[in-house]
Image 1 (cartoon, rainbow, N blue to C red):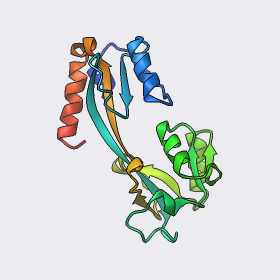
Image 2 (cartoon, helix red, strand yellow; image 1 turned 30 degrees about the vertical axis):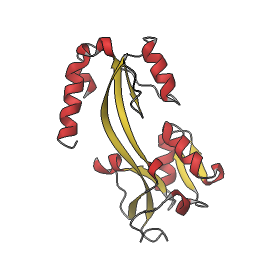
Image 3 (tube, helix red, strand yellow; image 1 turned 135 degrees about the vertical axis):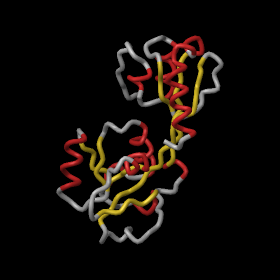
Image 4 (spheres, rainbow, N blue to C red; image 1 turned 120 degrees about the horizontal axis):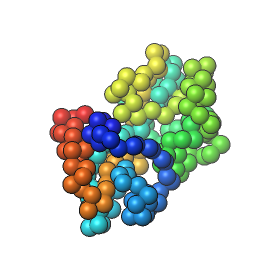
Length: 180
């Protein structure tokens, strides 16, 4: 969507470990648009709600958690859960609520997928991934209900650049209204 709404622009993506670094980069013109986790309440920035995401755990149908309708991070303590290092702030969330020794950190998405395919280990998923069809036969995805397992994303640009990015912001607003 970004490319079609911003013709002639070169797009690149970069994960940072904090919203503050992204905001600082935006103000220093290192970035033109950023996606952050909170509305910064800063008059020099134009910020619009972008999307929400809820964390899930996906388990095999015969896993003890499979019968639950929802779970919390406490239910996951002691389980071995593979995940990839490149998931941004979700890494901080999981490390903040589970022991590092419970997480089997993989260096790439390919390595993670190989481990998931070759085992019955539970793994993290999200409602966004499930919505686009990322489901594995024989596995069940269960929402994690802790408040910090829910994220709201905001897209921001410099207030002085808002007009240049209006087509993008309008398209995103339309998607929100349509529930996409």
